[in-house]
Length: 308
Image 1 (tube, rainbow, N blue to C red):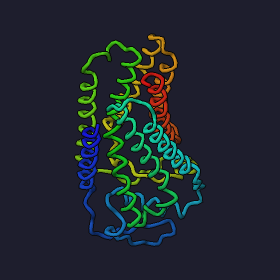
Image 2 (image 1 turned 60 degrees about the horizontal axis):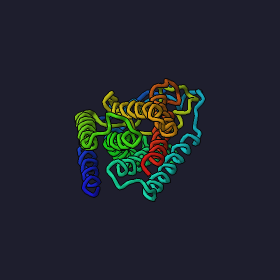
Image 3 (image 1 turned 120 degrees about the vertical axis):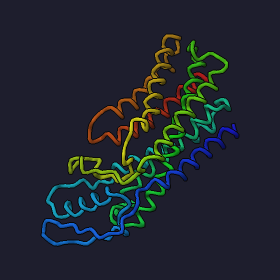
């Protein structure tokens, strides 16, 4: 247990440290952005940009300031993410205090709950605490530094839930999960997926403030401020999708084995993430994040009725 926890911590720290070198080079230049009033404004890129996308963000700020378009400045979506983070902190406390076996699967569930909780917390704090990050260099740097752990820990730990789900499936009676080496196999698979995801990330352009201009001016997503991948790739979300499908598989087998309660819990945990990531809407960011919160709570519920 202790060795596993240290191993995860080492992977997360190494990945986070390596990620710090993925930012694009800063440009020592002066960009002149012309706004609708015809005034030319000089922007020192050494003060405000880390990548070309920051130039686009700066331009959007000027154009929005001069437009009469309605905007969504509600802090309610931010409050939803902060509440989700508090919920997962409670979940981590419950897991630690529960009678679940002291196993790799239980440890994975505990630490993943904390990692996804941090993910939601930083997104929730983005707008109310770092609302000027697109133009304020210090806010930008702080929010970026806080965001690296949420990308790294989240991506590294999610695959290790394969072990937790395998433990539940084994307790339910899923035939293919009954072998003595199933935990070792899942541990290897999770490690390969986690490392591949982070190597791909470190070799990419990194993260930057998400472009919200694609949403309608009054869309809920416009009132959030968070960092996203500069170049999103399927590999970054693949671990969560595979986990969702695995949850559904164990859930279906739970019904067949006569454990309907655990089966329902696992089906809900899988469907929540699939729905949140698949539904195209202005609420997709919120639905995707809340889908993971629901998944973690229902995996825990299924573990309680099968492993305690």
